Image (cartoon, rainbow, N blue to C red; front, side):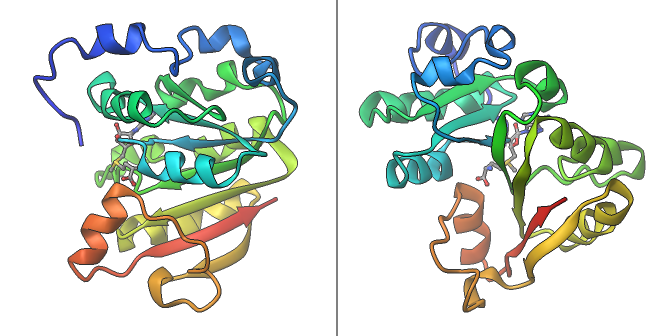
Length: 212
Ligand code: SAM
């Protein structure tokens, strides 16, 4: 979803008070950024931020951090935050490969992965955000009772993600292959931009919640 030709996106992000510009310096100290010891939940590959913004607005007792690799995409979330300021949400532009340098051991209570890029070629499997390589990183930063929630409309990516759980030492807490028609799991569901787009096309949405 990389948006091209967005002039000045880096400059707008650099001057935004909602973006944490030196995230590596906050490792182990994220409570100080928010000025509270509330639990921290993060979305990796946040895109334009709709999901994080709604979730944060609904749950003021939780602190949220949205992570996005590309400034041209992050810019959209920054622009929305300028209109609707949400005090318990911060944004970071970074590659999730460096996540362990940004969060300390057990510092995060939940990770959301929504409509992660599928990287269809086998040789790129380790770039997939629900891969065993990323699960090992999440294991470092998640609290002992932490959870990961993953949603996608991509069946191949979902099947791959399920196959990564056992070798990486994770267990399924809940799973559905049709989230929007699942009596239990659809309760409180917040749609992402991609979820709206693909469910409108008739695609079922897959979701798991995992723990270790
Ligand atoms: N989560 C949003 C949604 O559901 O609407 C966006 C989904 S979009 C398909 C995937 C997003 O993940 C893109 O914005 C992409 O730039 C971001 N992304 C992919 N790999 C990433 C990585 N390694 N670190 C951070 N962001 C990443």
